[in-house]
Length: 187
Image 1 (cartoon, rainbow, N blue to C red):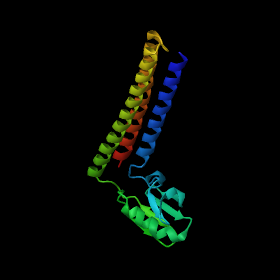
Image 2 (image 1 turned 120 degrees about the vertical axis):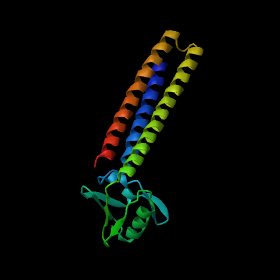
Image 3 (image 1 turned 45 degrees about the horizontal axis):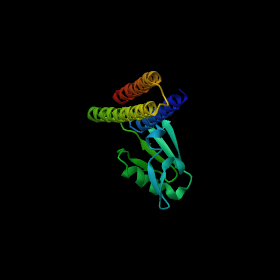
């Protein structure tokens, strides 16, 4: 039974990581509100090295629809501005020589629907990842049963626990999805 517990703990850890990755992924999807998570992981060419924006500048929300980015090195203002323009976020940075301000425009209805489709795709990808973890764990449990490290009854119990874990993490993903969809559709 100890070996099946190890398999379940490993699966649970991997499922938690999938939910956290989804949470981070959904934070990067633009809504009508300003959020530092929108740009903090943008890769900026900093002295020839692609560097996440949050490692070379502070990112703050100045009001509901505006981000301010203040680099720690003023020489990087131009490269940060270029990096934001190159990104697929469709944001226009305003460089005043000391900080970069980004006004977050309101989303059109069509763009909101596209973003909801993107949210659904990311959530489905995360669900597939969790199901893959479940499949790997089931295979491991079956191998342990074949090698007589686990009885049939213990294998069945462990698989039932594994399915319950999967259901818990899938429902967490559904909750994240509904919240993000509501946030995107909010005018």
